[in-house]
Length: 223
Image 1 (cartoon, one colour):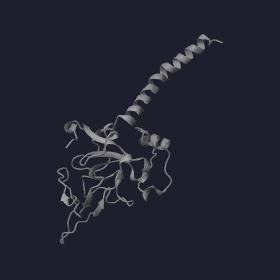
Image 2: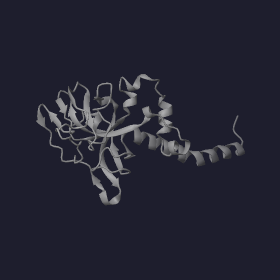
Image 3: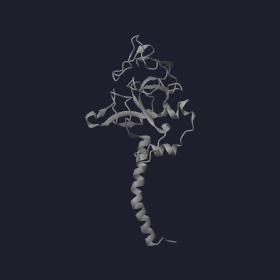
Image 4: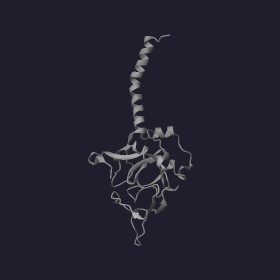
């Protein structure tokens, strides 16, 4: 039985309105999940190179084919979702995380869960490295001091030459990396996570490759 003209008109009107919206959302979701997305810097843990509210492009293709490299800035899932101590509580569903991380939803609704957050830090050690971080926040790889021109705010030393930052000395396991904030004196990173301190590569969402805002700092983030 064929539809009436009025029914066809209603169907067409529905798709004329909702079709472009649904296509835009699908395209946005697909690009965001598989190719690239935009992120902003919410804290000062990457100062001075990245400032609060900087807008970055996060590229997702390259780390699908290779492991992260030392010096790369990566965005990853919250330690509350993978650290074996922090993640002991019940985890939110993928649907909830998708909703609370969708642009403007959290701001409008107030919904938030620490397990759904994303963090941004720099890779300082990769699988197989014997890594140590001293009280000043300096990194040594296989007992050699790592050259880190992007770090200027190290932890202060007391009169005995002892730094106030957490020290760290371990071998990076296969499939993991160690990530630290460039602002060594003010960053919650692998030195402080209670479950072991290493970031599983599978938790990395992508690498920060470009800053597009503010315009006076527009440019590549490559070393």
